[in-house]
Each structure stands twice: as structure tokens, then as C-alpha cells.
Amino acid sequence: MINDIEALEIFASLCETGSIQKTAALLGIENSAASRKLTKLEQHIGRVLIDRTKRPFAMTKDAHAVINEVRKILQARQSIDQYCRKLHDNDSMEIRVMFGNGHINFGPRFIVEYAEKFPNTKFNMISPTDVDDFLEGKADVINLSGQASLADCVKVPRGRMLFIPVASPEYVRLHGQINHPDELKHHRVFHNLYAHRYSFQSNYVLTKKGVSLHFDSIDTVRFSNVEMTHRAVIEGLGVAPCMPIFLCIEDLEAGRLVPVLNGWHRPTHLNYVACKKEDWKNRQIRTFVNWWAKRLADYEKECEARLVKLFGRYFLLNLLH
Image (tube, rainbow, N blue to C red; front, side, top):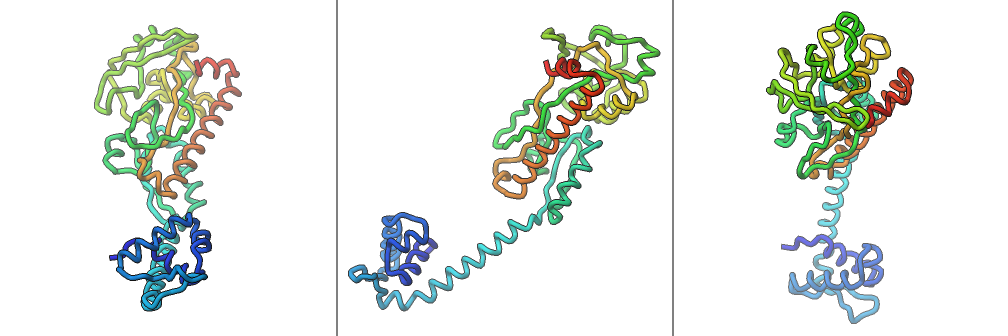
């Protein structure tokens, strides 16, 4: 069985050009490679197809007998390639995207922006993120926070994660200003930094001007959904020492939340959009991952600019260190 399509292309071209040099140039290969391929094809079928003693090269009797069938094979292959390219280029596919609950304020708007650019692409937006489910193939793309290590995956940066300790103005009025992490032991603390979704104990670092403190908390109430944490703090039920900037910027602007802890904050880190290396080869997924990562990174920058407008550049710079 002949399964070397390139050898058939070389043979068909030589029947037209009568020249190894012209055929090699047309197909974008070396002269020697074209000659070797033709020789192997002839050896495979046990017949000489091209008479190389003549100038230009001439077709043999056997070549005349098979050339029409070879052209049919090549034409069929071309039709298949064109069909595949059409499927590949029309953006008609479903992309399953895992994203965090904290993206509820802007994620829907962003994904519709992309869908309007590529109307043939469908999206299944899955929340919250679950790395194990992603690795098991239940999603094509995932938003990651921090230095998550995923084997056989491509990670595209989507901006840095800034955290702002916040409480409602009513809470501060009732309970007093909170200036140091040690004071948090006297307050109900809400956050989402747990070892896993079923955990009830957290352990993380708060920092200020190069000094770091470990903060341990065993809560009487915990939420695995950051939106519930956000709502609890808005309603004055406690303090959030590490609220993501994109989740609280509108509340800070509207005065529904205010900064606490006098500059102490959870250290910033990078965020990513990831997909498996095998999926990265798919143009639609690769295009979306790059766009999605840039759109989220641009929004992070926008939030930072809004924060500077509220509290000044020094406030932002402190959060970055």
C-alpha cells in the first residue's frame, strides 16, 4: 500500500515539469529529497515511472498507466484538506471555561465581547474552578491564581492579583479601626484561603514594608464561595483581610467598603489562564486563551488605576511589596 502522499505529489509534478529542480522548487523541498522519494516509490511498486535518461525527463508506459489514478488520489486529498481548513477556520466549536466566583462582576461581560467577535464559538462557563476536574478533561480552559504547577499545560499570564483588607464603614464605626493583624483575633474574619474546599482552617501571610506575619484563623463561619465572603463583609458581618481588588473596587468607589489593617496586606501574585498542551495546538482555543488572558490583565490594570485615583499611588505601591 502506498501511503506517502508527498512521493505521489513528486511523481505527478515530474510528469508535468520533466525536471527534478522545477518539481523540488514547486513543492518547497530539496532536489535530493525529491529524487529519493521518487526512487522509493518506484521500488515500492517495482516499476520505473520516470525515464531519467531523457531531457526533459519522460514518463514511462507504467507512468501513463497510473498517472490518472494518482491525480484522483491527490485531488481527493486536497478536497479533504480544504474541508478540514474550513472546519478549522469557521470557529465553530464549544469551549469549556472554568473561572472563579470572584469574576462574576465582569466575566459575563467579557465573554460576551469575545462571543460577538466569534459568533460561531459557543461557551460553557463553569464556576468555581476545580483543578482536578480540569485535569480530568471536564474543561478546556481554566483561570488560575498563584503559582499553580500543572504538568503538560500552557499557562498565559493574566495580570497580578492584588489583595485589599476591607470592612464596611458601619462595621468600623461599631467596632473601631483595625490597624494590625493581631487585632483580627477580636473580629469575625472572612476569607477564602483554605487548603481545599472542605477545609475549615487557613494559614497565610500578611506583610507590610518587608515585614511578614503568619495569620492563623479557625473560623466559626466560612464560605467556599468568595462572593458569599464579599456579601458578608458588605453587610457588616465581619472583616475580609484579603479581598481581591477586582471584587471590591466598585464598593470602595461607592463607599460600601473601606480599607483596614493600615497597610498590612496579603502579598500580590501572578494569575494565569491555562489549557493543556494538546489543546494549545487548536487554533480556536489558543486564540481564546490569549485574548482572555489579555482582557483580564487589562481589567486588573484598570482596577489599579481606579485604586490610585481613590487613595493615591503610595497606597498601590504598598500593596505591590
